[in-house]
View 1: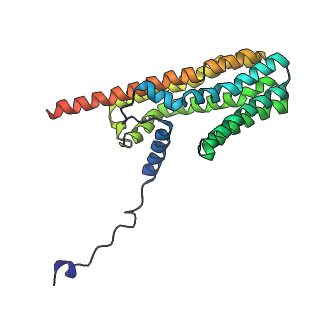
View 2: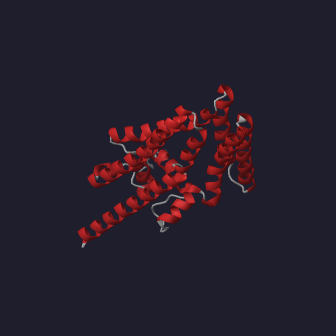
View 3: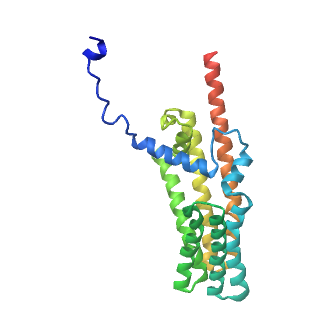
Length: 250
């Protein structure tokens, strides 16, 4: 009788084919980031990565034109319904373009959904400046989340990069990585809070034209700058870590 016949095969652990919650979350975060064009493992330049993430010229147009249409129309006519209709209409055009380009329905409809939500409040209140309230809430939420993550020593940039680099949360034991990720997370928090601080005075003054202009200026340009800083810093951080490991082995 062979050993295989004498010893019955041991059953696999019940959870052997089950993945942990952190692994599932890591895959979700990593997949979303890579679909957006962020991949620290790639050899792409910082500029190329930033351009992919913002969506190129189409992404810029989708971000700027609906809001610009609202500002110009309302400033020229003072007709709130017309301005909002043109803004939402512009978002709808980009949605159709995305659908024709075989984007996923969620990705295609997200911009239109955001435009409709933003238009709902000013239609209800009659105050054109309320078109920007949803943006204020978004900035408060993101800014607070980034700051809080640093305070509890789970900087969000580290969480995202850790999953993208397939190291989970082991980066938390590396002081240099913790410092870099915490600093970058604070920079992102300041971006959102700076937008809020710069726009609120014009909101309370009812200056729709200036408020919209400030939002456009502090939108993609600042986002692209902070994203470029983040990608460059993370790339350099891991390059130095690899050099240190190589020196230690030598």
